[in-house]
Length: 147
View 1: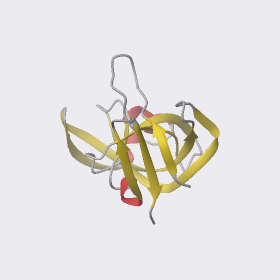
View 2 (view 1 turned 180 degrees about the vertical axis):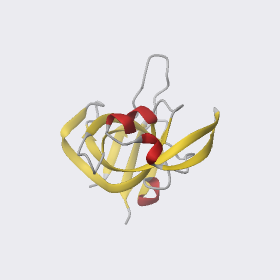
View 3 (view 1 turned 90 degrees about the vertical axis):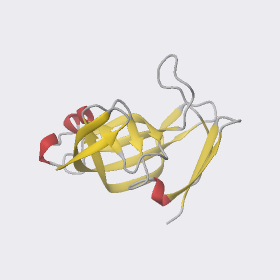
View 4 (view 1 turned 135 degrees about the vertical axis):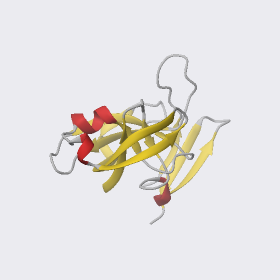
């Protein structure tokens, strides 16, 4: 299902509106899941979540494949785990519908990082599957599944 004309959202006071999606992240091994707002980040090579999310979902953080990732805040230890992502419908008023899943991305490798504060939906594992259109003057975006 295409996601068309979603309004930008604001995370926290003083921040500018950004292309955010309401998602659920699930550990496919434990079934535990969390709702989060996720930033569509065309500058991110990978999908990444704060480390606390992996722990809350029942992953043994440091048991994942380890790497060192360069970020705007310097280098950070990163641990890769498999997770499922569900994208929820959002109204043009900017509220999510937690009962309507518009797209599922199963068994996605997600990088977990200690110094990250927001879920990032980057190229590998997410954007590579979509055509993304961002309309900054109208503060909205559209993504359409392409595979």
